[in-house]
Image 1 (cartoon, rainbow, N blue to C red):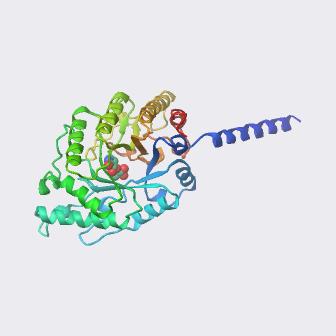
Image 2: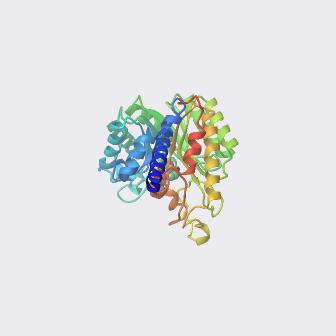
Image 3: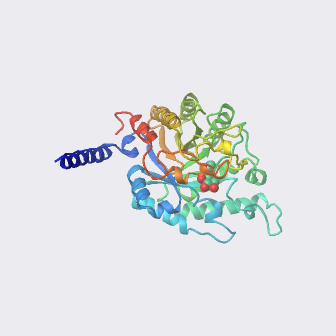
Length: 374
Ligand code: XIL
């Protein structure tokens, strides 16, 4: 008798939690009518190698970004060699699942092979040679996915923290107009694709000012830029939601869409001067910088949930103007933050834990959705 009652209770409770899980809306449902919600994927994810994660990605997201597979060093490793094997799989995955597919990225100073800027003797190429290489790359890559990749990060991270142009090889060899030329080539390759400028730390006054000026200059020249990606590699307390809010408003005033393109929230201590997303940083390991290797304390878990709720309330204040929010990864397990800016740490920056289960921050993001959104 006792065992039967116990079984009934267990069954009822089991059904109830399952029903609750089913009732819980997904991210894409909760923000429907407000903005798309996405994640950056790597090959194991878009090949569906892990069934639990595969189901999660299909259920939660309606847009995807390629974490690495469309970067120059992967699709165009040598002068006459393009390799689209991984990128093709990424795009097929997006198409099969009716997702808004993002291309990331065409022109960046990082993850681009040295040969791009050099002749056979290792000397810098001329402006004309580099422009020809840039055009060939953009026309082949954008052209291949014409009509399938809907939005491109054309130029990534062209600015310094003080808002001036970063002295990349692109700028040094071509000149300041490399940015507008990259947009022209992308538009020529797929006139329907949405074209974006993407960068980090745009919440900081000086860099934001530089980016606003850049967008104004591009628009004044008739360049087809339709959106700005603010990457969103944040920490628990920086930038403030006021800074995030005014960044969205300021770009909105220029008539461009605003996207949060690489969202994650770092819970680990910043060695110095963070948060930033300057990929050239490589800081020495130190156990003090890896305090949660055996688990995230409850108090920090709650701080993370509150931070995510505040961020999504801020994004959702600008439904429509903010057209997309994309997380830089799916679960904490594969996040790039475990290895950057310090290698081998245990970070907890996303909404799903190492077993692909929703964290409290997931519930907080769902709760933060405007009631009219879905
Ligand atoms: C990162 C990837 O997540 C890593 O796997 C890779 O090793 C380095 O690049 N800004 C960007 C992204 O625009 O492309 C970067 O992605 C993170 C910072």
